[in-house]
Length: 492
Length: 101
Image (cartoon, rainbow over all chains, first blue to last red):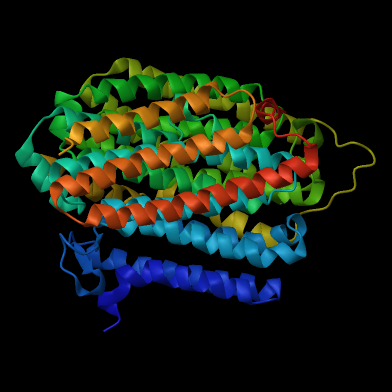
């Protein structure tokens, strides 16, 4: 009975719990509710994944209205994969949030904080699960609006300006997506993604469809911080509360990458987006320039959070690079990196959250000798950093390996060089932190101790996942491969 | 009967105006918010015109959703703006540049 309603429950549960969170006066209760709801969402997404793992597609018509007219929720291997990432990260980040947020956000605002968190979760899950283009826009706005609030709650006064900057850029992006969807609606008269795909295939090429593609690509590019459109991201990640940075860095851009995949490969035909339109080369160049330039910029950052934020832009570049290869192997690499990047950036930002909890600062100068004072925290950071570089036996290695294989398969040797150069640059910026933490003596009067267990446990959960998925790649590679086959299959 | 292209040109003009407002505006953040609203309105204009010429009402329903979203957007933007103003006594775009470091 309840099984068939799972696709919609996934979204409705956090949506209904969000206002309840606001009503609970005590912040502990609000946290507990948010945590239980995320956990429930994780369980639902695991059940969904098991059902679609065999290649099945679950379709759910909201309110019983059949697909092309009503809103349809579709779960297949691609979005089941995304759902797992989003819900798992939300659970881990909320475990971390209890202690961290209690310190960083004023007591009376904590109820609001968890409300916004659940709304953001609703939006992200909704984008992943919906099969309706307009519904996607609404969920996009739900997640964006709540993430502006979450970022704005940061301790630093500059959090507000960062949030405002994100609001301006994010709204422009969302409006571009909306205009694109509007143009598609004009040529086809439908908004259901499957229906859109079917009708666009019949209609063929026209200037309206081309414009729609352009608007959608730029709009989603803004949301996923594709290289020249990434300017909002470093500030937003730097000044947001630690737990929020973890959550957004590991999920928000991933969901945007998912949107890009859905539109480029399923709504439009891959032969149109990459054959008739020169989008493949365009994305590849942007991604390559993005990887090199943002990796270089992150070497010169003094604030470690900002450094990792720039590195996030570079990592998004790897995903887009995989997409631009337009092959099953390239998509596998992109999806794999999507999963692995959520793990490694999650670990890194969680470890930084521990540092911020004890030190109150994440500047490079402040962490001198921290390897001795907070050994567990810095060890987790090290695991995440190794994964970020792509050392064998960590998750990062697996996805970069697949990316290189995919580039070689297409014979695009310059991209192989870019990927390796990006990893070398990553060694440089990570080394600055490692050197500061391990090789410098701690200041005499520095009396910090190891972070509390409530922060260390989630950090090590993700750090462990980095190693686990670096060794046992059966789940991640299998899932990515299946999702890639689904995306290219329906377009071929 | 006014042809569809007229509506599209109008929404194109609105779009261009808001882009100018966003990128050339060097003074006032409130104008920035207004330009964003205008951007959403130009999208609305498209939806209404398309829905009229397609004879399909759903486009007009969406406009209500978009209006709601635009209102939420503006309220969050203004809320941030008020706190920023309290902190700095200024709503100059240049002050948004003080994020370095």
